[in-house]
Amino acid sequence: NGRRLPLIAGNWKMNLDHLQAVALVQKLHWALKDAKHEAGTVELAVFPPFTDIRTVQTLLDADKIPFSLGAQDLSAHDSGAYTGEVSGQFLAKLDCRYVIIGHSERRAYHHESDEVVAAKVQAALRHGLVPVICVGETAEDLEEHGASAVPVRQLTAALNGVAAGADIVVAYEPVWAIGSGQAATPEQAQDVCAKLREVTAAAIGGDAADRTRILYGGSVKSGNIAGFMREPDVDGALVGGASLVVDEFAAIVRYQK
Ligand code: PEP
Image (cartoon, rainbow, N blue to C red; front, side, top):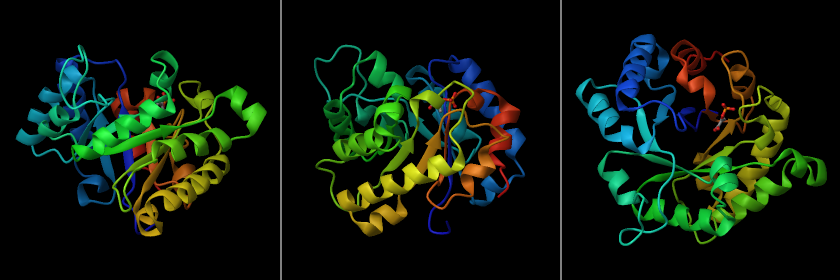
């Protein structure tokens, strides 16, 4: 889709210390130096652990590496007595453009409800961060309700109270596809992403929904990325495991339609 710059996002999860992060970013930059992402036809974003962000920011800035930076989570609060939490204002000061919110691992292991996710979306927007709102159904949900019911409910809740025209990214990640090696088909992804664009339009307006990147995530590899990118409502990918492997991630960024 010509109106939306494709976004390939690498979620490192709890992998790579700050020195390993430097090595990966440098290798990725070398692998992509002559690639089209440098020409502005695809945006690449990395989401390191919190402890790596300052170091990665310094490297991106010093070597003029054109990757966007994001965090994997943030606090719903701005500051105060919240031991162990990280404020969106700290992330914004480190040049983070994005923050992942509501990843299925946070929903499952940290019991993040739709309400918590919505509060974090508000926190991100307060601090000028673009929330990457993750939604997706489990295998049980799929069996009981079909593919789109749970993602539609989750996104509707996450966008509750978000102003018209807000700058957001949505990531459709079927839980059964994450880390399983069993990706959704491009047709399945398109079907749900189209419905998520309707939810987005109802919440923040048709123009904003037209501008919103909707990503597919779940076992994306160099061998299946092109099929997803051919779909009209899939504007990129959120990549877990494959984002840690330089050649594999570089090949995903260089996907050919
Ligand atoms: C993820 O956790 O966001 C993800 C998509 O993981 P993977 O690519 O490893 O399935």
